[in-house]
Image (tube, rainbow, N blue to C red):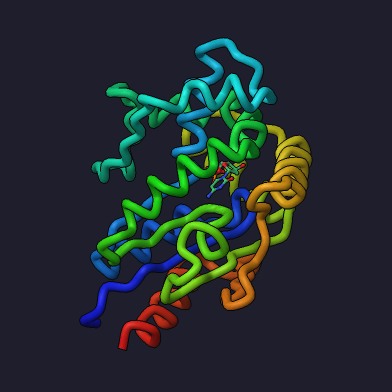
Length: 224
Ligand code: DC
């Protein structure tokens, strides 16, 4: 494949986007960009500042001077917020539960979208998120909308948590995922919605390898 294209992968929480996007990026020699990590880092910053996450003006006041860097590392991607490695803490429950509020603010979104476009300028990227195909890279060469049933997504998150060494309640996880889906889909600014020209990939009954393979095949078709 000669041309280095931009691949946008959107979809609801825990559909397997990041795992599959990472695999695809590795296979194609592309850069993986986890945009959810950027909203998570901002949420962590706001929580630490002790402000009300629902107050747009207070959250947005923190944006100037904020630096979020995504660095490829041996264990996946390292997330650096204002010089500090926050890769672990941004996956904890307080951040996960607060991120929908922070990512709903228009000022936060425009700041992140500008950063994300800058990161994708050179091509050769696999970017995952909620609004990549619709708002960040509307002219991406390949757009995929990845879904899986709520129960399957809860099961995957549960296994992921176990692998990280903590227990979780499967029923509660399913509820939290459904709530986050609803918030992400119903927000006024850039709601989670499938781009018209995105290929729908339902991974409920697919393995990670099968889903990655499907995207690589699509990418090969687009880059020719
Ligand atoms: O993919 P994730 O679970 O790490 O994303 C965390 C949250 O960030 C998710 O609830 C919605 C938000 N998000 C967003 O609004 N737009 C993106 N491009 C990526 C994530």
